[in-house]
Every structure is written in C-alpha cells, then in structure tokens.
Image (tube, one colour):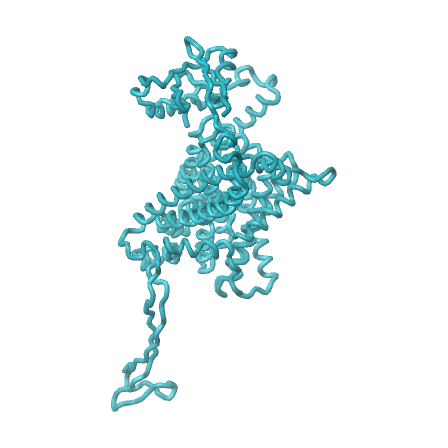
Length: 612
C-alpha cells in the first residue's frame, strides 16, 4: 500500500500527514483480470443505451410540459413574418419541446397549408438549429464535478452554439435582404421531379423505441393542430391512449324531396311523393389501447411531463457519470494515447488540411446512421471532457453532424404526403444551405474559426465560475430570446430603437477589448483598462462573492466544531500560494477567495466558500 504526502498551510501552522492510497496491486486479486475488462464493454454499451433512451424521454417530457405553449407561439402567423421574431420563436419552441424535428414538422405544416411563406420560415429554421444545441450543453453540466473535465466538456458543447449564433448573425441579414437560401431551395426543388416515397429507416429509433414506448407515447398531431388554429384539439391530451383504430363504412338511406332526380344516382329510389338515396358514412372506432406507464394515469400533461422530466434527468445524470468513470478506466495509459493519436493526429504535410474534412465526413456519416445530431454531439461531450477528443477535432465533427442531420431531414421530407412534399423539401433544403454556408464562413480558413476561440473562452470562464454555465443556459436559450421576441412584438421601430444602440455598444466594447489586447498604447490612458468602471460592470467577482456567500450556507457552523475539520485561511503572498497548492487534490487554480475554507481531514471532504 502506497501513501501520498499532504501538506496544508494554515494561518498559524503547517499540517503535514500521509494519506494511504490503495492501488490495484493492494486489492485482493491484484490487477484487474481480462474477464473484468471484457465485462466493461457490454456495460459501456448498456450505459450508452440508457443515456440515449433518457434523452428521448427527456424530449417527450419537455413536449408534454410545453408542447401546447409551443403550438400557441406558432399560431400567430403575422408575428412570424417578422424575421427576428421568427428566429426567436424557433429557439424558444425547440428549447420547449427539445426536438428540432418537431418544430420543423410544424413549420412544414404551416407552409404547406399556405399560412406561412418559405421565406418567412427560414428564420424559424435558423432558430431551430440554435435551440437544438441546448441538449449537449445540458449534458456538459453533468461533468461539473471535476474542474478540468468540466472546462473541456463545456467548451466542446458550446462550440455548436457559437457556430450557430455566428452563422445566424451573418446569414439572417443576407436572407432578409436577398432571400438567397429560399431562392436556392425553390430552384433545387423545381429542378427535380419529386415523388413521395417511403420514409427512411431510423436505426437509433429502431433500437430505443421498444423501451421508450413502454414509458410514454405522444400524439404530436395535437401540437401541430394548435399551431394551425384547430381549436378542437386544444383540450386533447398529448399522452396517446389509443394506438390502433379501424374505419367502418355504413350505408344509410336519406330521404330527399320528390323532385330529386334519381336517374343520376346509383342508389336512389322513389316512394310516392318522397325520394330516398343511399349514402356511405365512415366512422373511426378505437380498437386497441397503447401500452405504456401513463395510458390510464389520469394525470394532466403537465404532471406527466414533470414526472418524466425528473426521472429522465436522474437516469441521464447517472448514466453519464458512470459512462465517464467507465471511459476513464478503459481509456487510460497506452490505450488512451493510441486512441487520442488516431482521433486527434493530422495527416502528414502537405495533406494536414484534409484531416478536418475527414472528421467532418465521419460526423456526417455517424449522424446519418443514428439520425440524431443531438444524440451524436451529446455522446461526444463526455469524450471531450475526459480529453479523448480535442476541441480542434470536435469542431469539424460537430459541423459534420450538422450536415448529417440535414440529409436526414431531406430524406424525411421526401417521405411526406404529396400535398406537403414541395414545402417539406424546400424547408429541409433551406436547413441544408444554412449549414453549408455556415461551414464556408467559419471553417476553411484557420483564422476564421472563431467558434473554437469563443468556446475555449467560455470553457475557461466556466472552469473559474461554475455557476456561469447555468447563467449561460438561462440567458442564451431563455431570457434573451424572450426579451428580443417581446421587443419584436412592438414593431420594427422598437427593434431599431433598442437594437441600434445596443449593437453599437457591443461593437465598441469588442473593438476596445481587441486594442487592449493587441496595441493598448494607441488608446487613451483611461481606456487601456476597464478599471474606471464599477467592478460589477467589468468583472464577475462581485456576483461570484454573492453566490459564494449563498452557497457557503451549506457549511453548517456545527461542522466547524468537528475535531476532524480544520479551517484554512487563504495565503496572502505568492510564495504562500505556491505552498498552498502543494496538494493537487485541494488545488483550485485561479480561485483564491478571501473567505476561510473548511476541510475535513478524514477523507478530505471539502466544503468551501467558492462556488460549485
């Protein structure tokens, strides 16, 4: 049994002691046997299956909780003609239902029914592309327990968000001004003789549906009906009760006036002064109930949605944590080096530039097979967290996943009914062109790969302030879309009045930051730093202190009297700081709070005032 020296510096003394560490050789049986190693592979597949199923149930939970609200948002077609409002609607609806395919199918129904033009639908599709990236960002939160893993995982998850937001900032004005993507989609559709075909098989759903259908089944036509203005479905439940029904035809004799001409009717007769005709009446009768947990629960849609939301999040967190631990145990030593080398190594010069495009093809192919970009990017997030996939390699994989999900949408559009076929194909092609133009903007030239730098900055910020991840989710996917959507309801004058000074302020701040980093001597002395502003305007430290004091309440005063607890005051000098971080288990880089920290020496359980 080996031991690790631990040294803690307090305000008065230095405490040194050894912590025994039990290694694999110390355990009964020595090193893990090959049989145990083989058992890890099916366990990994089982955890991955549970992870994917929990994502599916999570999507159903969001649809139950917010599906009818999403339908109401789509209902006002006059608002959707505003491109900014359409963009925000696409984000909000996709976040509410956790499914870009659901929001896209609603848009297809609106376009095919003539309630919405294709040009007005393009911003909604852009918003849907942004909203679907929230899933892997939520998955990244599950790795918040380890700081470095969380930094990498959050950066890998938000690289998708950064790409989508940057693409929208450039392509939305171009689309509004010229209608480029809707024009290309219309020309492409008109150039082919399209015929409705069979729907492409979905490999992932074929594997997961036998299990998820036992938990919940939804009637998504209710959301589409509300969006189309059909008030008769408003009181219908989204929980599907009847899975099979039959249509029966019955013949009924209907009397008509004596003047009715029977010569043109097949089933018609005269009886004195009356004429009768035979009519066929069809009636639909439900024959078989669905078999899932909530078919006869009697609970409201909201209650079922909240139950499924809680359950799916528990399963999602558990599977993800176990997946990370299992991957860490499998991918270590020489195995990890080999895998990292295969995934992250570029081709030899001068073909190194081809490596990213090959990764893009791999991402597109994998997404096409499983037919879900959310599942692919969510499954990739923990691999980025543990360091198997680098951020530079995750970027082309994510872009390829975007292309893969658009090809899936095109195949789904080709399986649409004849009356919806042109609209569905145009919407799917607009989605395809949006991602293609986005890749052309932000990938071929290395200096234009801004999403990588933005995601890295977000990862660093989140590693320093872990609460920043939750703030980011709330602001980017809920508060900001709601605020912009509310302003857009007041008309374009209000949008210009609010948006112009706000945009000018953002551009000014970005330019000053750039000059402060590159050439500060060209700036006036006042603008060489932001110290002339109140601290809360240029730093997160005041907010961090507030959150730290709130979370510090978890450290009960009763625990301070525990004999196994030592109160440690942070060092004041750099030399003391180096001494402080001698123990890597207690190391918190770039975070030295002025508050005392509490450590339980037995087991090194930590409860400090810095935010988790």
